[in-house]
Length: 429
Image (cartoon, rainbow, N blue to C red; front, side, top):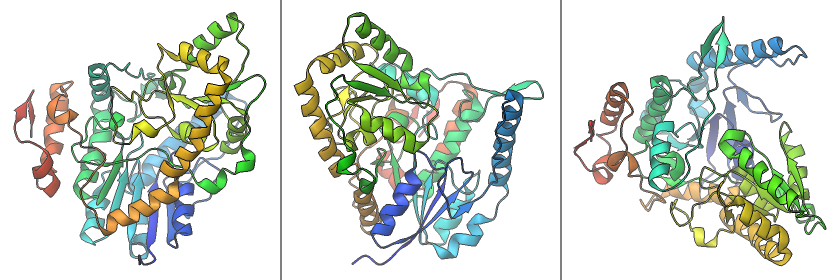
């Protein structure tokens, strides 16, 4: 029998995973502490490290100043906080998403030396490096994601935040995190599509859902005129341009359907839109589907997303997954087919809820995680090889960084077992 565990879920709450993980672990009899760097949701956390200015104005420049101030507050408190010392003795397991408590990840070594269990979960651009993604996707015939050149202006100077900076700052933002997690974590979860810099084998992490939130009575099927929902968090990354191009073509042909674009809504408001949908379109570039795909399946909807089943195996049993595989080139044809063929649409939708309950329940994930900590057998979901075998460094400066951080993990057991020694394109393994 597994004893009651004290679990800390920390750093950045992406797609409400903190809330779902907390409830799932508590359902299993464990106690949970949640620690967020800075909160931008209605969810209440145990601890919030950085304060947030909660002010909205009709004056754009005021809102911009508030946004910049919140970013600076987060950076300052991430670099100067004592949270780790205050909660270390109260928890046995630390689950980190996106960051850890320390911006240089020194706390991972500290926790490791104390004998605490560490799980690191990569969820997207915390690990995905633009240059690696582009090379990897082109190699496998997948259209690379085109990132917007986002920046903020401080005193008239444009500054790219590290998560979108295509230069050395953006690289180190990811590389420090990845190698620190690979060196000190007991378990790592990630996805192939974001793992171009990873060396250590990992377990697959789709976005999970909490089953009690998705009641049978909430599921609505078979609208007389099909409703198609698209909910992009980032329109360029999700391929929204191509979604609307498909909508326009279908409308010109007189195909009956309604489309709904979900943006700027709370999570609860968005869920209401999903419940009313017949078809949900997730992302067209990045293979694997996100939280929208998971929630769509859990609600018994037809879900369309880039899965690249045949060209890009990702470490899960894709033969059972009912998500309809689409990309910018074939979305129009596949969407038209589903809008016209009601029976086909219903058969696919019927498979979704059962698949979600079996493969995407956060409660089952938490059970698996605890069992892996008790007895990890080394049978991982994915063994990354792209960085070792194919990746070409984007600059001499980057090459030095890659070699420096590879050196930091060479003394681990997994490295000698899974990474072949040698030199390639200036990279030293």
